[in-house]
Image (tube, rainbow, N blue to C red):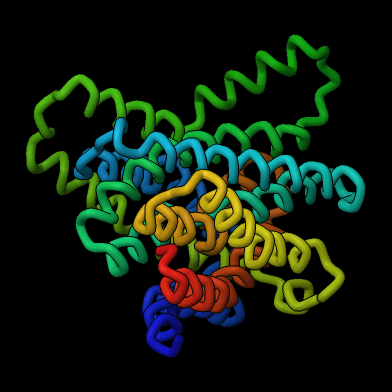
Length: 318
């Protein structure tokens, strides 16, 4: 158990420190809201798309071998999304909070935390499995996020116009464009881009996580984050407790192999994706709430990850 906890701490602690750096820089007025807005737009439109595109491009993808895992991932994701939407409908009052709450429940940090943890746990075999899962489910994550956050659009449009507007938002989402392009590139078996293109993309990708976390830290409201009855705490409980349990139940019902169960559990149990904060901000959601959920789950998801993986390995399930 101690080994598993130290393992999770090693992966999670750098993210916590980056968010604390954002808190400190904001308090010292080294950065302000204008910087946060510009930097968040840069991450959303350029850095995260590069991260996702080149993660897929450099991975070995074997779709046929991962059918059961992908099915399980879809079941877990849609199950958490529907549970989140149902809870938000009855218990989350502010419209700007609803989509952010739902994202907090179903959307995990697969591209960074997930793949890094899978690499440490299962090596190159885990990465090839995790990359397929991450790529396909990240597309689903972004589509569902656009749908849930689109309620912030107060324009009085008819059903058809709203559907068209939402479809446009999905089609124009930089993260979805990057993932679809990467899968198309792989399926067409095109040669790898020139080295200078890859290097440029990797440099932009390397900026994504630290800059997103610093911006989120600068937006944190510590008092609100630790309010046990607040929306951020409710979403965090959904991510830290409900999501891992859902993953284990679905994985057991689908009779996943130990490595597939382990990969899915890690991906689902990872903290809320940094992209959820960036997307909430860009689509008119409550960015303070998004930052609070990100901060809380970044710290405390390591406990559920460590305890869950230790138990799964003890019972031979992962």
